[in-house]
Length: 208
Image (tube, one colour):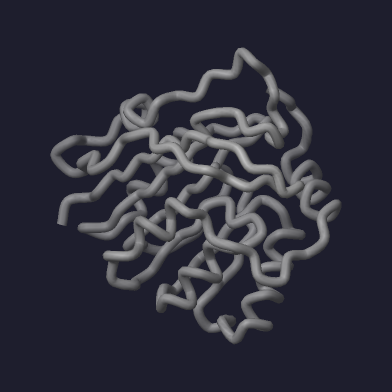
């Protein structure tokens, strides 16, 4: 893995892009929250902010975190511009070094993957413990390499959702795996190309 400074790396990634004005939410998040009652949600690796904005519009109170100060600043401005400043708190955290405070009904980690060093298992385990009773951890990972992906290594391996759940080592008496599968969908890349991709979807529920 690369050992570059993650703050400088991700600030550079976002600074190189034009700021989004109304970013889209992720498909798997949209389908998951349809039947959930709005509450407090933690958005890990909020990026452009599409998920945070969508959740806030549906009545959720969102704590959105990212290692990039550029991403956090842009989302703060977007939330205000869309009249959602009272529902979105964007915070910069160097996960797992610092972790947002609070208890949540939902934690969403979409494509929380990086070419840099990151103890992802520790972060997701902390997220599971930050859930309120009855709350859910939603982890959606890449399960295939899209033509526009930054990682085109043909030997890259994508751990199955069941493997991710096992690595967390959560007590099955308190946390239950509700979903662990690999659905396919047609995705559109930043250059307008489309391709079939695989998502690895994991939902873990904390006992009520």
